[in-house]
Image 1 (tube, one colour):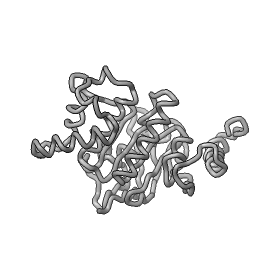
Image 2 (spheres, one colour; image 1 turned 45 degrees about the vertical axis):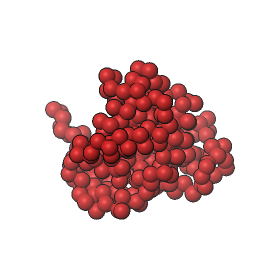
Image 3 (cartoon, one colour; image 1 turned 90 degrees about the vertical axis):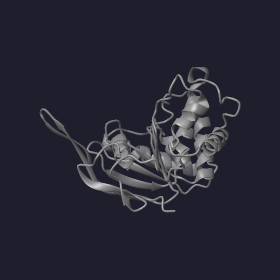
Length: 257
Protein backbone atom coordinates (compact mmCIF):
# COMPACT_ATOMS: atom_id res chain seq x y z
CA UNK A 1 0.00 0.00 0.00
CA UNK A 2 1.30 3.45 -0.95
CA UNK A 3 1.64 5.57 2.20
CA UNK A 4 3.86 8.26 0.71
CA UNK A 5 3.35 11.99 1.24
CA UNK A 6 4.12 14.57 -1.44
CA UNK A 7 4.30 18.25 -0.51
CA UNK A 8 4.16 20.11 -3.81
CA UNK A 9 4.92 23.83 -3.85
CA UNK A 10 2.98 24.50 -0.63
CA UNK A 11 2.73 28.13 0.45
CA UNK A 12 0.36 29.65 2.99
CA UNK A 13 -0.71 33.28 3.38
CA UNK A 14 -3.07 34.48 6.11
CA UNK A 15 -5.09 37.66 5.40
CA UNK A 16 -4.80 40.36 8.06
CA UNK A 17 -6.52 43.71 8.49
CA UNK A 18 -3.19 45.40 7.82
CA UNK A 19 -2.33 43.23 4.82
CA UNK A 20 -1.09 39.64 4.52
CA UNK A 21 1.09 37.33 6.60
CA UNK A 22 3.04 34.74 4.65
CA UNK A 23 3.68 31.74 6.92
CA UNK A 24 4.96 29.15 4.43
CA UNK A 25 6.89 29.71 1.21
CA UNK A 26 6.94 27.13 -1.58
CA UNK A 27 7.75 23.85 0.14
CA UNK A 28 8.52 20.76 -1.93
CA UNK A 29 9.26 17.40 -0.33
CA UNK A 30 8.60 13.68 -0.69
CA UNK A 31 8.12 11.38 2.31
CA UNK A 32 8.63 7.71 1.50
CA UNK A 33 5.99 5.14 2.42
CA UNK A 34 6.68 3.96 5.99
CA UNK A 35 9.29 6.65 6.62
CA UNK A 36 9.62 8.63 9.88
CA UNK A 37 10.27 12.32 9.18
CA UNK A 38 10.57 15.18 11.68
CA UNK A 39 10.11 18.90 11.05
CA UNK A 40 12.10 21.32 13.22
CA UNK A 41 12.37 25.10 13.20
CA UNK A 42 11.91 28.20 15.31
CA UNK A 43 8.52 29.08 16.82
CA UNK A 44 6.29 30.77 14.26
CA UNK A 45 8.02 29.33 11.18
CA UNK A 46 4.90 27.43 10.06
CA UNK A 47 5.64 23.86 11.21
CA UNK A 48 2.18 23.21 12.66
CA UNK A 49 0.49 25.01 9.75
CA UNK A 50 2.25 22.67 7.32
CA UNK A 51 1.12 19.68 9.39
CA UNK A 52 -2.50 20.92 9.36
CA UNK A 53 -2.34 21.27 5.58
CA UNK A 54 -1.08 17.69 5.28
CA UNK A 55 -3.97 16.59 7.53
CA UNK A 56 -6.55 18.42 5.40
CA UNK A 57 -7.51 20.73 8.28
CA UNK A 58 -6.17 23.77 6.45
CA UNK A 59 -5.80 24.67 2.79
CA UNK A 60 -2.62 25.78 1.07
CA UNK A 61 -2.74 29.18 -0.62
CA UNK A 62 -0.70 27.71 -3.45
CA UNK A 63 0.45 24.16 -4.08
CA UNK A 64 -1.02 20.89 -2.83
CA UNK A 65 -0.40 17.77 -0.76
CA UNK A 66 -0.85 14.23 -2.04
CA UNK A 67 -1.01 11.11 0.13
CA UNK A 68 -0.65 7.84 -1.71
CA UNK A 69 -0.89 9.81 -4.94
CA UNK A 70 -4.30 11.32 -4.05
CA UNK A 71 -4.76 15.03 -3.48
CA UNK A 72 -5.65 15.96 0.10
CA UNK A 73 -8.84 18.03 0.06
CA UNK A 74 -10.35 17.26 3.47
CA UNK A 75 -9.56 15.32 6.67
CA UNK A 76 -9.56 11.53 6.31
CA UNK A 77 -9.66 8.57 8.68
CA UNK A 78 -6.59 7.35 6.79
CA UNK A 79 -4.59 10.27 8.20
CA UNK A 80 -4.29 10.36 11.99
CA UNK A 81 -3.33 13.48 13.95
CA UNK A 82 -2.03 13.71 17.52
CA UNK A 83 -1.86 17.09 19.26
CA UNK A 84 0.25 18.33 22.15
CA UNK A 85 -2.75 18.00 24.46
CA UNK A 86 -4.34 14.56 24.76
CA UNK A 87 -7.82 15.99 24.01
CA UNK A 88 -9.59 13.03 25.60
CA UNK A 89 -13.25 13.10 26.60
CA UNK A 90 -13.16 13.22 30.43
CA UNK A 91 -16.50 11.38 30.77
CA UNK A 92 -15.31 8.39 28.69
CA UNK A 93 -13.07 5.52 29.83
CA UNK A 94 -9.80 4.57 28.13
CA UNK A 95 -11.46 1.97 25.91
CA UNK A 96 -14.37 4.32 25.12
CA UNK A 97 -12.01 7.13 24.13
CA UNK A 98 -10.09 4.76 21.87
CA UNK A 99 -13.29 3.36 20.37
CA UNK A 100 -14.51 6.88 19.63
CA UNK A 101 -11.83 7.18 16.96
CA UNK A 102 -13.02 4.08 15.13
CA UNK A 103 -14.99 4.35 11.91
CA UNK A 104 -18.70 4.15 12.75
CA UNK A 105 -19.52 1.38 10.25
CA UNK A 106 -17.35 -1.26 11.93
CA UNK A 107 -19.37 -4.13 13.44
CA UNK A 108 -19.49 -4.65 17.22
CA UNK A 109 -17.20 -7.72 17.41
CA UNK A 110 -14.64 -6.06 15.14
CA UNK A 111 -14.83 -2.92 17.26
CA UNK A 112 -14.17 -4.83 20.46
CA UNK A 113 -11.27 -6.68 18.89
CA UNK A 114 -9.77 -3.47 17.48
CA UNK A 115 -10.06 -1.64 20.82
CA UNK A 116 -8.47 -4.55 22.70
CA UNK A 117 -5.58 -4.71 20.23
CA UNK A 118 -4.85 -0.99 20.51
CA UNK A 119 -5.10 -0.96 24.29
CA UNK A 120 -2.41 -3.66 24.25
CA UNK A 121 -0.42 -1.87 21.54
CA UNK A 122 0.07 1.22 23.74
CA UNK A 123 0.61 -0.81 26.92
CA UNK A 124 -2.56 0.14 28.81
CA UNK A 125 -3.74 -3.35 29.74
CA UNK A 126 -5.60 -3.14 33.04
CA UNK A 127 -6.55 0.51 32.53
CA UNK A 128 -9.38 -0.09 30.04
CA UNK A 129 -12.06 1.28 32.40
CA UNK A 130 -10.02 4.11 33.87
CA UNK A 131 -11.02 7.73 33.21
CA UNK A 132 -8.54 10.36 31.94
CA UNK A 133 -8.34 12.02 35.38
CA UNK A 134 -7.00 8.73 36.76
CA UNK A 135 -4.12 8.61 34.25
CA UNK A 136 -0.74 10.31 34.12
CA UNK A 137 0.05 12.70 31.27
CA UNK A 138 2.06 10.04 29.48
CA UNK A 139 -0.75 7.50 29.77
CA UNK A 140 -3.24 10.03 28.42
CA UNK A 141 -1.03 10.53 25.37
CA UNK A 142 -0.92 6.77 24.87
CA UNK A 143 -4.71 6.81 24.68
CA UNK A 144 -4.51 9.58 22.08
CA UNK A 145 -2.04 7.54 20.04
CA UNK A 146 -4.27 4.46 20.20
CA UNK A 147 -7.30 6.52 19.17
CA UNK A 148 -5.38 7.91 16.19
CA UNK A 149 -4.12 4.47 15.14
CA UNK A 150 -7.31 2.46 15.51
CA UNK A 151 -8.41 3.11 11.91
CA UNK A 152 -4.96 1.91 10.77
CA UNK A 153 -4.10 5.23 9.08
CA UNK A 154 -1.62 5.32 6.26
CA UNK A 155 -0.07 8.46 7.75
CA UNK A 156 0.23 9.54 11.39
CA UNK A 157 0.94 13.21 12.07
CA UNK A 158 2.28 14.26 15.47
CA UNK A 159 2.20 17.92 16.50
CA UNK A 160 4.61 18.32 19.44
CA UNK A 161 2.83 15.44 21.24
CA UNK A 162 5.20 15.25 24.23
CA UNK A 163 5.77 18.96 24.84
CA UNK A 164 3.80 19.03 28.11
CA UNK A 165 5.51 15.96 29.62
CA UNK A 166 8.44 15.87 32.02
CA UNK A 167 11.84 14.91 30.59
CA UNK A 168 11.88 11.27 31.72
CA UNK A 169 8.28 10.60 30.63
CA UNK A 170 9.06 12.26 27.32
CA UNK A 171 11.97 9.89 26.67
CA UNK A 172 9.78 6.92 27.61
CA UNK A 173 7.07 8.07 25.18
CA UNK A 174 9.64 8.52 22.42
CA UNK A 175 10.61 4.88 22.88
CA UNK A 176 6.94 3.89 22.82
CA UNK A 177 6.25 5.77 19.58
CA UNK A 178 9.30 4.17 17.97
CA UNK A 179 8.11 0.73 19.08
CA UNK A 180 4.62 1.37 17.67
CA UNK A 181 6.06 2.69 14.39
CA UNK A 182 8.13 -0.47 14.00
CA UNK A 183 4.97 -2.58 14.50
CA UNK A 184 2.50 -0.53 12.44
CA UNK A 185 4.84 0.88 9.78
CA UNK A 186 2.62 3.89 9.21
CA UNK A 187 4.31 6.87 7.62
CA UNK A 188 4.96 9.31 10.47
CA UNK A 189 5.56 13.06 10.34
CA UNK A 190 6.51 14.74 13.61
CA UNK A 191 6.66 18.45 14.43
CA UNK A 192 8.94 19.11 17.39
CA UNK A 193 11.07 21.80 19.05
CA UNK A 194 13.20 19.07 20.63
CA UNK A 195 16.22 18.48 18.38
CA UNK A 196 17.31 15.35 20.28
CA UNK A 197 13.81 13.92 19.89
CA UNK A 198 13.94 14.47 16.13
CA UNK A 199 17.34 12.77 15.85
CA UNK A 200 16.33 9.85 18.06
CA UNK A 201 13.14 9.09 16.13
CA UNK A 202 13.63 10.11 12.53
CA UNK A 203 14.93 8.73 9.28
CA UNK A 204 15.21 12.29 7.99
CA UNK A 205 14.82 15.77 9.48
CA UNK A 206 13.49 18.85 7.69
CA UNK A 207 14.93 22.11 9.00
CA UNK A 208 12.55 24.99 8.24
CA UNK A 209 13.75 28.56 7.81
CA UNK A 210 12.31 31.43 9.83
CA UNK A 211 8.93 32.72 8.66
CA UNK A 212 7.95 32.39 5.92
CA UNK A 213 8.93 28.80 6.50
CA UNK A 214 10.67 27.00 3.70
CA UNK A 215 12.68 23.78 3.75
CA UNK A 216 16.18 25.07 4.42
CA UNK A 217 17.94 21.74 4.81
CA UNK A 218 17.19 18.01 4.80
CA UNK A 219 19.33 15.90 7.13
CA UNK A 220 19.47 12.11 6.85
CA UNK A 221 19.88 10.40 10.22
CA UNK A 222 22.12 7.55 9.10
CA UNK A 223 22.44 6.05 12.59
CA UNK A 224 21.30 2.50 13.33
CA UNK A 225 18.54 1.94 15.90
CA UNK A 226 18.42 1.83 18.89
CA UNK A 227 20.28 5.15 18.97
CA UNK A 228 22.77 6.28 21.56
CA UNK A 229 21.94 9.89 22.46
CA UNK A 230 25.56 10.46 23.48
CA UNK A 231 27.05 8.79 20.39
CA UNK A 232 29.46 10.63 18.11
CA UNK A 233 27.22 10.68 15.03
CA UNK A 234 24.18 11.67 17.12
CA UNK A 235 26.11 14.67 18.47
CA UNK A 236 27.37 15.59 14.99
CA UNK A 237 23.81 15.76 13.66
CA UNK A 238 22.74 17.74 16.73
CA UNK A 239 25.47 20.29 16.07
CA UNK A 240 24.57 20.45 12.37
CA UNK A 241 20.95 21.33 13.19
CA UNK A 242 21.84 23.91 15.84
CA UNK A 243 24.34 25.48 13.44
CA UNK A 244 21.47 26.11 11.00
CA UNK A 245 19.44 27.84 13.73
CA UNK A 246 22.17 29.93 15.29
CA UNK A 247 23.99 30.96 12.11
CA UNK A 248 20.71 32.40 10.85
CA UNK A 249 20.55 34.52 14.01
CA UNK A 250 24.31 35.35 14.01
CA UNK A 251 24.70 33.68 17.40
CA UNK A 252 27.30 31.30 18.77
CA UNK A 253 26.33 27.67 19.30
CA UNK A 254 29.25 26.83 21.57
CA UNK A 255 27.19 26.80 24.76
CA UNK A 256 24.39 24.72 23.27
CA UNK A 257 26.16 21.68 21.79
